[in-house]
Image (cartoon, rainbow, N blue to C red; front, top):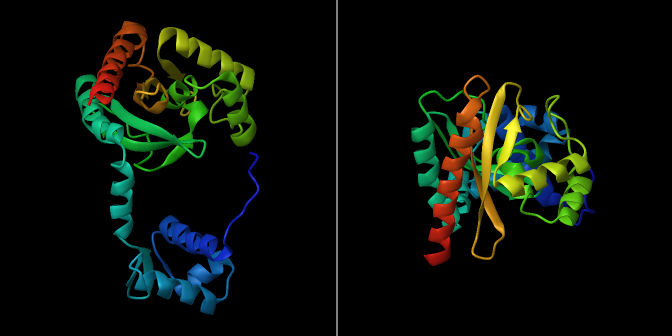
Length: 254
């Protein structure tokens, strides 16, 4: 995966390295954290004391953990757009009507981010949690967003972020991705046939704002043995298209 030239502040990068390590390990002691980051204990201690003072880290005995202050930041990010707020109810309704897992994702920094998700009564426990990032090209919701882009932008996306493989079904060729985008435009929805997780299928539809640009996408996912036939080919796509059309109308005239 190619990356853009960095113009960053080293201290800020280190701060986030500390936080990511604490999150990954679900809390660490000073010595453990310094070892993981390959940094001097005294340096790591200064970062931790700053984060403690600003309440972004808590200390429980000798263990440092990420604080709940990030919950406030996350909720702010999740509710900053009217479409994000509107999608929460639609995701809940989709999960109830389909009994499967419904989600709303947005594109950020070349990846799909889960903003809302809801499990129906028969949903399988496969999707990552809120805020987790996955590859756009390997998901139905992500491919629905990609289909709203120009071919030139799709090529730029593939060049910048790559098309890593997750299963034998994952699209890893840009021309194949372009063909999938064109098929999505023609039928109005994107299909994931085990491209992210073996045995899991999904239908995704982009949600566009009044300017015609994609804001995010709704999708419903489930196991292959249930996601097939008329339900998968017609009923579920029609349902998702109806939900997204309603959202787009509400956004346009709210």
